[in-house]
Length: 328
Image (tube, helix red, strand yellow):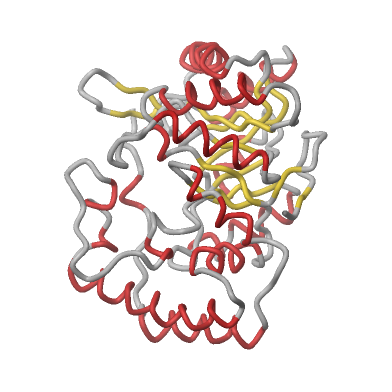
């Protein structure tokens, strides 16, 4: 496992982080809690020492599962915990952005309780909330840092312009944007900005909601409530084009003796400005594969071939915009 230093965190963190969205069950077809806890334990035993979660993942469920796993693991392994705030929901499951100081003060206490912690290592604004001045949100986070309730201040899904406004009131240590072979929008400006400003990136969606694992076929279907049911990449002709690209990637991965998922994660980790990639898992069997995603690299000729495949197969890439929650 490869490790990297990120701002405001004393411990070096693994370049593969365990992502826990799927552990919340919501939008992923449910979850077996015991399996999820075993996945966390296996990840930590294998050298993954950073776990990313959020209250919205199962409406508190994922944070609770992480908390239960941490109690089982104890203090034998130092683990960096990253969670988020800024999304609220009601009993109908409707979600809105809310990064107001009142919401933050409520969320930090709820997250600390669910996780069983006294301090959160990385606290991230889940989505930019245009109805609350970014400086106001930043000031609130800076106070939490001064109070010792958080160690590092992070944002997620923020543009460089939004980060500039935020930074007028508080530093930004990490940014969590979507990034994978099929969703590369952040290459235009954001990665270069983060490099220049010394902001670590914890990129999510490295396997593009399972598309880059190679497990789907043209006749694959998804139940109502599954995130992929509303992802345009998993529909009609789009789905066929993306599957075609995946099949063209398969022999490249095979030359290195790696799975498609390991290949996709390695590619992302090789890109300038990418610090850490999140690897989602619902059980221990999906964690083993993650251990083979670091410690090797793709040849330059293969990187050029990958770009050629993408250009020829998917001339008009579809981004992850469908996931954005509505504004307050």
